[in-house]
Length: 274
Image: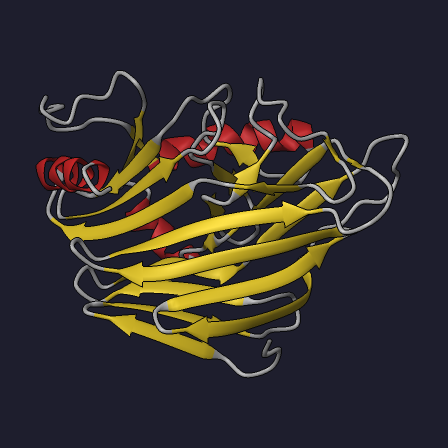
């Protein structure tokens, strides 16, 4: 697999690019119709240890990648865990699909307390004065795409940032889930003119659609999709045995023009895809 050269995929109005930088691969997913880069940052990776396994890691290492038609496959390591991320551009509707797998190639169990890996969305600091007025809505089992939610569903991004910044101070600089004990199947970002639908197709009953925030100065970053065991109540991963692999369900990122009604229609179209 290639380790040095940047790569780029395009389909319709969207572009996916990967660029090698010193702190780890920089992934960008841009939609030219909405004129927004919905991913823009390095792949976030964090593995914190237990007393029996004291090593901790905060970056994806030994990365390499290759392109196969509209698919980007990235490989790397975090500690002794091997990581593979797959990104695929597809249409009808246009979207980015992501899946992540982790495996233990060694001969001894790998034990850890917290694990998080996923792409980041890092709007510039100057954008937050405006972006703080965007709203975020959770998709859960009670979500009804046929029911119009009213003018201002969800929560303002500025409120989420302020609330979770206070939580982060008491927890240290680790990702803070946007909602603890979340049962989210997806999320919708919208300013009533543009939107992004994020949707999880789970392979396991307790897998949720991850969304975290980390208050990296001078501006916060969202950690999207990927895999995690940070959300309270999810105990699927505290140990990975030799030779074992865990693979996530597919996370879908689908941008579009319009407000909540159009975002709900896009969600309905996505869940009908076989």
